[in-house]
Amino acid sequence: MEGAGRLEGAGRSPDQHSRVAEFFRDLVPNLFGVLIAAVALKLFLVPNRFFDGGITGVSLLIHELYHYNLGLVIFLMNIPLIGVSYFTVGRKFAFRTLVSVVLLGICLSLIPNYAITADKLLISIFGGVFLGIGIGLVMRAGAALDSIEVLALYTLKRTSFTITEIILGINIVIFSIAAFRFGIETAMYSILTYFCATRCIDYVVEGLQAFTGVTIVSAKSEPIKHQLVNKLGRGITVYKGQRGFLPGKYDISSDCDVIFTVITRLELRKLKNLVHAVDPEAFVFANTIKDASGGILKRRQRH
Image (cartoon, rainbow, N blue to C red; front, side):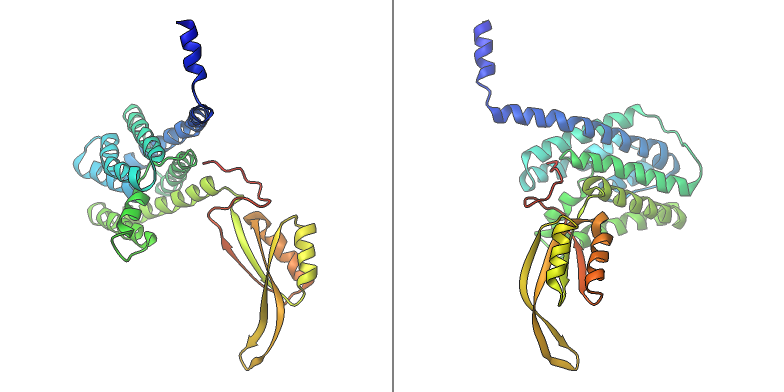
């Protein structure tokens, strides 16, 4: 029997070992995220009848209107969307989200309602911050506590609206009901809570090292390329283009190199200073990159 046990363990593939190790590695931030989100709900939002957006906001509304158990409501509201995510996102995501929602329900049942402060501004800001940190940690672990994005993806395939428009529409309905039932002031503070939560989710998921794509058009491209590579330490991509074509001078143009590079948001000011020192007339524009890998990027991918 001992030999059989060794053979059974030896038969486990490296992929299975890595999946198990990955699950337990992500379990810690998942647990912390669930606990922080539960604290935000039971110590800030619920005792003061404040709301959030998404499925969490709908669950809070149902809890306040009909006094059902909040943990149970959140679980039941997320179950259909977890089922949808199984087919639209993936089995692993759906399983991790199910575990996270169950853990959140347990935490909400164990933590009593206790208002830490009566200051509505503090409740809105810190309740949103803690809720955003909790949801963000769960997202970094490859799961979700609020399946509103899954609903938006599902609806996107059947309508002409964008994901942002769908989520915005749902949240408008939530805050409108809150305003009608609990007052304009409560709805406005709830919107502030939602804003703080979404900003914190962005910072937790993307981090301060979130990447930004920068495009530079300049007649002095060579010294700029030298500065970006040797001073900033970033790789660059160069496109061949033409500059000019100004109003009243449409016939005047010249060949130029269009430089593209990817940096962190903290490096953006340094890059602009480097470019401005070489060519104050250079055209520089930046856009946020949600995900990036390969090249010489050094940020470690979480999932």
